[in-house]
Image (cartoon, rainbow, N blue to C red):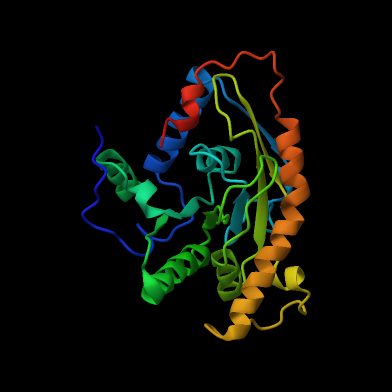
Length: 268
């Protein structure tokens, strides 16, 4: 049985902020892709990769926020990592309890780095550390990846409301948001077809109707909180159609045999 107690709760970014994919990081992705294809026979349909930000020379650019929804199961971060270019590498913002749930997870994540764990009850100092870690990753040219949903469950084919953290990251960094609509990840089995659609990048100003290039509200002001809320509400609305389409495109016919359905909760 895994060790579910983590004696240390690290705050902020684990590892150095970098856009480079280390050999360990690349090796982990190759191993995950091998398991995905050869053992689980899971297929990932990727739509819209040409919408990702690029450098003037055509190389993939970093310094943007990947916002994935809906987040249904443990496989979602792996789908994003396998669908997007290896570089610039991803920095994940996620639940510290899930990241550090067992001894082997702590071993892997501490060595690979590139995660900003969230712990319950951290207070403002923890939020400041989260923002500093996110800003460091974006400034280094990495891609900040998060799944912004929060709140109670909603019907399949829709996304839960988005938490304000995404809005704060966009405001503080000025980085564009690239919405990623996931489909099919709520029910896993051998041979499952999943889908990820990359939507057009969008800045926070466009989401709230502010002048392009305009200054953000003062940090921790009531205006900043109100603007962050407007950002996430507008992004949720922008993604709703793609989320519904992603689900519709991956609905499983009733006559399909679903073997190894334990995959749905394998990482939990």
